[in-house]
Image (cartoon, rainbow, N blue to C red; front, side, top):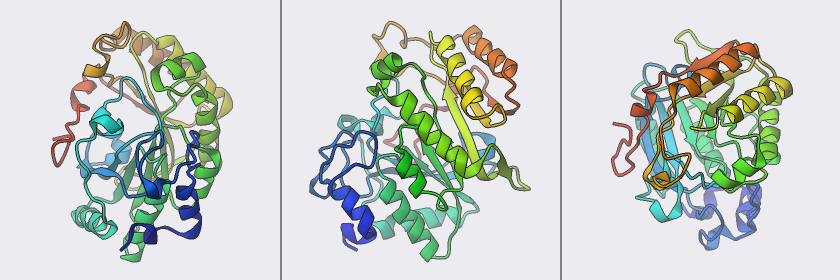
Length: 314
């Protein structure tokens, strides 16, 4: 199957003059990956694997079939997936042909894994849709999880209505200067909030969970507490409570681990302190959040992928 044949007319038009994400690079991705994300109109998949390191309600006992995309529309200094998210460090791609990728996903689904997660999908939404359509055409309708950094256009999230079962967005910052310094996205706070509000509009604050304790439909917002930025995390939680609801499901993460890329950074070059994280948990509780998950302080030991391996997390 030719590359362009996996997309519908509108998706082709977007990729030919790419305005898919807030960067709006307006490059022809069929002619190469010269935009901010560094990816072309191909599938740009770095890994397809069973992942058991997500929130219990997302991965369950069986794990989730995660599709990790190469490239990203954010350049976070501290990214744990920097091996694949930054163009210069991409190790490999796990499939360029749609049928080949579908074969790999179906194999995992056939082992009893009921969900497929799309990780870092903001710059490859047409590819996400093509994979979902391909699975449906083969008779598979897994729970679909949109695992995003939050830097998504409102229109793009609207276009996913009815295709995505569970939205799993980050909400990283509310301070523009921090967003610019750490992720090269001064407008991240407002862009991400608009996108998450649309997810909330589609799903509400509930998270439907099946008899096995796995999410079937809904919204779960993630926030990673960064070292030296407990106050920023508290502001993030306050904004979520004010703009959405303290009834939304949260995943408050302590898993930060300094990568080699921040070895010389004055703030991000150390682990998160227990006292920092606990102070954010206290704020979460005082704001009335009642649904979600917190992490142990040693959780960072389980989130150090090696994308040179077939399964980066084993």
